[in-house]
Length: 420
Image 1 (cartoon, rainbow, N blue to C red):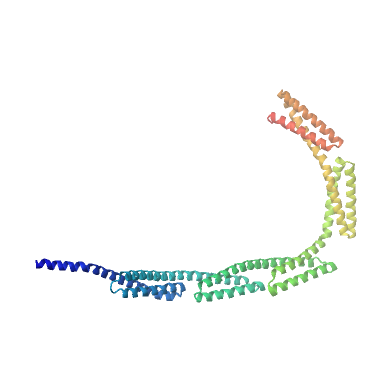
Image 2: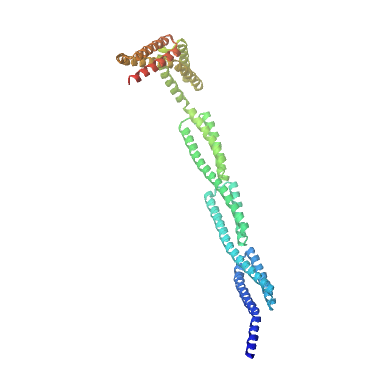
């Protein structure tokens, strides 16, 4: 009996100690969790301090505070206070999350730093390339822009060194935009340089041609050469002093225009003589057409054109080239009008010849076809052709053309029916 009582007491003591043993296990797990968080915070501390990231530092500071609160609650829960242990667990887990977040931020900051460094290097490279393209001939405006760009880029580099990545990135992106604009200006500048070189070559060629013409003693030639030389000198000053090739090109274009007009004037006598001779040949050929196809009005206009052409020759021999040119133009205009007048009867005569040949070719075939419809159409075509000839002889060219068109359509239809 005594043995049973003893066993009962031992069993009762074990049962009453069960919750205490369980709580002791929870406390051990919490202590382990606190130790793991401490290890993570220790690891994060060095990483955060080296990164210099303000965001990471904020997360790390919060982790330290939360871990401190968790430890205090753990110390105060010596008598196994469930609520204090639960809060301690919550705070240490939150501290661990903050420490992990701080480490993640430092990793992201390193990536951002690499990105900003690459953008800075790209801008530096662009600056060097543009300066190499410009050389020493950059215009004042372009030089001012490049100086401003270099100053901004230096500030961006300083921001980067001070860990102000966002400010550094914003500024170096502005530098890139300015450099793209500068690159366009440099491209325009280089094109203007090439244009100026080509224009200068053209200017020198014209000047040499005029000098070799042997007309340098002429007052007109001297005046034109002096004006062109003055413009050329102004253009050269613009390119040598400020690289202003755009304005220099305009001045050189004006100089070239003056020299070009001068060379044309020097060639003018020969050109006028050629024009007179060519127009005489045209007049000779046109005269035969007017004699054959022209009416009274056309013949009168033709005589008028010959008078202008004769005056052109007289004025040319006197050295009045301007007057000769005016007479040549008048004669040419009249001959153009006459050509339009005589062209129509020529075309009608040609049409009559073609359709007559077609009638002769189809006549026997139509008769052999023994087709009344084709024979009727053939007679109608012959009738239209006869009327066209009559209108042509009377000078009614519009009616003649209309009858030719009717005859041509009928003959084409007949030809198709015969399988031609």
